[in-house]
Length: 448
Ligand code: GLN
Image (cartoon, rainbow, N blue to C red; front, side):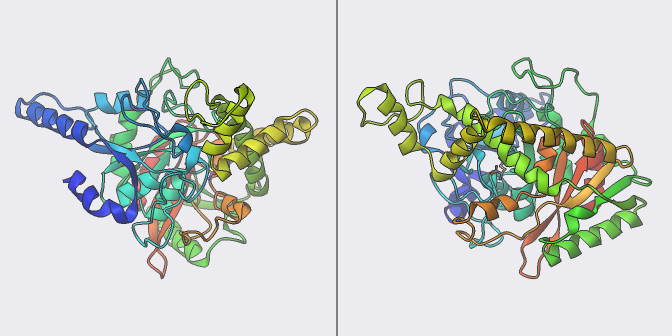
């Protein structure tokens, strides 16, 4: 049924780069047999999952939204994919994304521009725009995204779905094509908070293949814990997240949700978290620096696209990279190389690392007083396709509320909290302490 729906409607949305039709149908048959034999079912038995195309799927093309990896067929499954399969999930297809996850609108894909299912003249957000649109359009009940600076939460907000960026280290990154390794994290996009909790249960866990994954298995049962009471839950509201630049209708919708939380017994308090200006600059310096190192491997020799026009190895590398990388990826590589180069390293990269420490400390201090922090997910409503393509700085501003969370490695969730007058979805963000996803999910569940 999901495949049929995709075939009928995805032409107008372009959430998928490619489908996994044959395999998905075979797997579905297996599940049906299992059910008939009354064998025990996995956590996600038979659930179709749409996976962002920067996560390696064995034997299934994984492009990262780039011409560079247009024909790349991974010889292995990411740990995430292994876990999904173990839980009984069915990989239904791979979703569109900004090239190498760099962007906030899914317009930087080398293949297509995904449309927002609520208004196809608008962007779905990015970089996991294909995944968010797939869930919003009813193409899959669960999609997987990656979040380096907001790429799960911002598209979830733009598409009116739930999106969780787990604590750095909770979900293995093995097999996720790296953008900025110290910030990247995989997470679920779903229609409901319950689905989100269930999916997180299935995909989290330590992994010897990822040195940054956490070491002990958590005893958390996310699904059970979300129904707990939120009476006395301490919610911090950082006033800097509600100042200039925030769309009036978003402010209104968030305000309504805050009142609801209060009525349910949560204790809200305004406080100051003056990190906004610095976080965005620090994020774009650190993420670009790491990207420039991570993307050095695409040289046209080992794997990836190779130019046909070259004389000698130097020209081979230059031409391959020139022809296969898009504009935004080139911009990030140049920025990243610049801030890492001798003479500029101290002025930019080192400063950004100092800011990173300060931002982390600011959050730790805030969490001495609060269980969760509440803010809008995005300062703006979904914008028109093409509207911000000529001005990268304006595009970067769309991430102002999300990037600091990655810098600090914290978990955060975006949940729908109403619509604008123009019927576009609005998202609310809850930020939690490290490995306290259960608190986020609980608060989110009560707000749904
Ligand atoms: N939009 C941000 C960027 O372009 C975040 C991307 C992401 O989280 N992958 O870097």
